[in-house]
Length: 214
Image: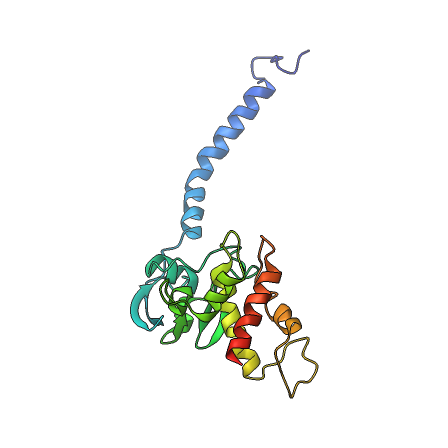
């Protein structure tokens, strides 16, 4: 006897049984599914007031507390020089300088920096008056596609300040006397990825700027 043919007046086929069961489960579970969906989609938290001093200008914003510093600057202040690369703090394209310290702005929340001073690539220089590091990158062709360049330059500027302040790195031989070297640059800049591999030119640009400072 075929499994799809009923054997008596009260028998049902396997196909009928499966179809009926599926319909019953769907009807019974619809309210539960809707309730579960509502639990998983809570009401967004209320906005929080944040004050940021970006490139010397004071901005008062009302932000979702989950907004990253990168998104606050790009989406709310429309300063798009800082790039969103990996969005996981691994490429350095989003590097900004906050109170003199370079950070990956995609990994930190804007509300954590209330009242602090933020410098982006737009605040370092302008097309008619380049920052020395920007001019050095142009002179030494320290970029190709340019996507990582804003983060590279911001990181380079803050990195030289770290060396000047005597902050050691993993390759510093004498912790009491931190000084500039290409090895220090390569170690300290290792968090800024250049997919075009312009690293030798980037090191040359930083060396030129460091020499001018000295």
